[in-house]
Image (cartoon, rainbow, N blue to C red; front, top):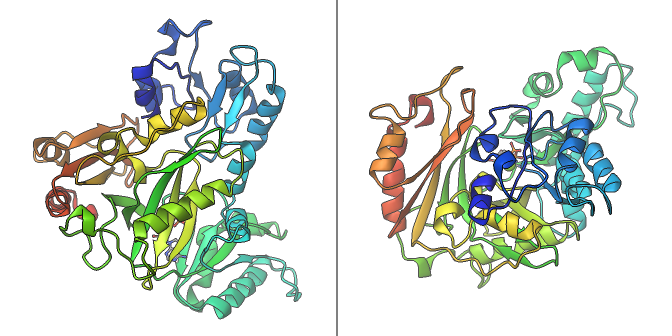
Length: 434
Ligand code: ADP
Ligand code: MG
């Protein structure tokens, strides 16, 4: 989608991805772009390989990411090696966002420590360690169990246990309902093999107090090289099994979830005069500013709206985010165009939401393997096209259950109309996704 946004401006992009047929590589052929002199070649390799990242960096002036699970040491190395010389123009390669920011965000615990240190409200959290102060012998599982129990003692149940690294779509999270589930949780989050060595398993997990949210809210923020920050409207994200399922934009009022009222009545919360939307935007912008000067590009900021109307920041994605897919059709410029403007040091015009109401439905794979036929008769895609929705199928090679294979965006005159259409689409999804 970033390459699709670059196309109308003829911005050449070269992609690093392990798969030769990666969706991004299907969108453009940089080797035939006249502006790309010397010719560019997509790179087939791992996001974690220094050699591959260097091969990419040699071809570009600006390097950016669409996934945070990259090798930050390699990115930092490249940023230093190509600081003032090298790269496509020979004048150095700029890396946005700054690798140090990606490093902080990669470690969910470090991210929380950083945000809390900047005065941004987050759910209370504690590290889980396999080497507590009290010696419990050499069994790391016992020590971890003790550490989880002590967090549960402080925060109560349910307790959210999270992996610090490599987590996405709920993978790496475990909702602990009682002390009885601790062994199961540890088994799920820290495989037996890594405990068998008997060595301390430090820094793998942390515990978070349960946030009894009434809604999950997200805001896309774009920050330019000069520090100018703009945010898209706050939206409601609805997750199923920790995977984003539906996004309603803009945020519907708390008391009338996703039902039809006019734009002017939206967003009033219970805390003070400011609307929830505005407070969410302010909190998101503050969080991105707090990342520092290197925070350049688009960021997805996930938040919890609590019953008293206050907001807690959940996590930041340092990249375009599926809670911002609706911006492709529903805003004057999309999150992808915004990202390009930011990293290319172009102006960031005011952001406008164009229709009265919009929603995005993720199309998740439902087969265990192979390729789902999204275009089959009576399927969700045909129905979506029939109702005038914008359909995006990503062209991913392998379909897995729960994998994000595409999305549709619906726009309408009212929240009610959009909600009714989403309901109709959800109705034709396979059983698990209804
Ligand atoms: P991921 O990287 O998978 O997006 P998150 O930390 O955002 O991980 O958690 C996934 C989902 O789990 C959230 O969108 C939310 O629905 C739920 N969740 C996460 N943390 C908490 C919490 N502290 N309290 C309640 N629910 C939570
Ligand atoms: Mg999340």
